[in-house]
Length: 143
Figure 1 (cartoon, helix red, strand yellow):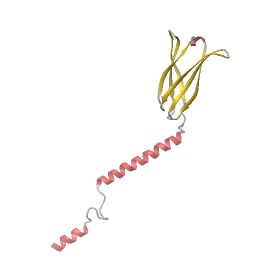
Figure 2: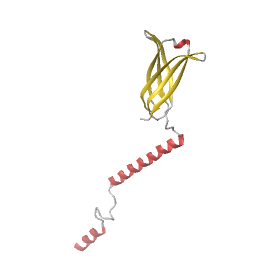
Figure 3: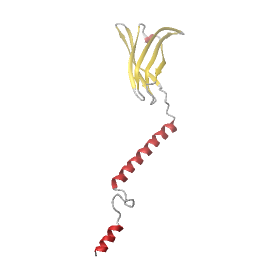
């Protein structure tokens, strides 16, 4: 009988031996790792497939034009349509009367993350509603 118990113990692999099956939590950790790797590959493939730009694409929207004691305030919202971040983004607003630029103002946004919006304003001495208002982005920095 002692020989039978001894043979059964020899037939069963001991924990930590090369023949032992991995514990349940090792399988769980391996599964989580596999999911993270596959998710990373999926995100990279998505950006490669959709052609996401690594350059910011700012877009200006006039929020309001109000008369102020110092002149006229043009409140704007700048939205970044890509996931690329822009720092020190310079926006120039020009008032034109025909082909002539009658007034020009500049706004610098310190930080515009991808997919976000920032608001600011430009002060003009002339009424922007009586002129053609044009926008130009002059420069930005990569943070």
